Image (tube, rainbow, N blue to C red; front, side, top):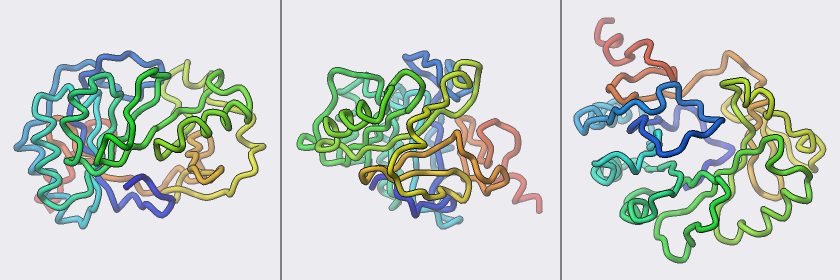
Length: 243
């Protein structure tokens, strides 16, 4: 159920459940972070109907932190019952809330922050992916990255990516020099981003965008707007009705 190199932007839609989050990460790309907004079940169903119409297979539940949504279980159930491969990204700061989604979502994408306590695949029906950002200072050498992979690959599918530049801190920390020296297979992801397959694990290189005009995926925002932008700029559904 994890991300694959063959995945296309037409395969999935991102559903932003909330901008509420208990963390304040320096690399957060959510420009609406902290706004006390929660998507309604009505807008969830509108998004799922749009996804069916457009032959979308995967629904990605994101935030903020989606487990802070009071109806996140109902949202995930609705997506599953309508036949979508449902994936949720979480910081795993609320283990009980995450566990309540086990078997409902197909895959749990856990963002790695150096947590000492992480779940074990043997205790979960849902697939577990550990999503790891690579930036200046996290892993100083290839050997440090290798040690991390060795420690966690038995319990998780591992997914790596470099930072998306969204502020001065991310700009200063995006470059990870040793990545270019890895003995890795080069790929292009989403017809846009250079990637690597290293020891069987995908590394998305947001510092190596090869096509700035690539087609983007659909996003459903908290207010129900569906667009191909992370900002609330145009409502695709309403525009389609007008044509």
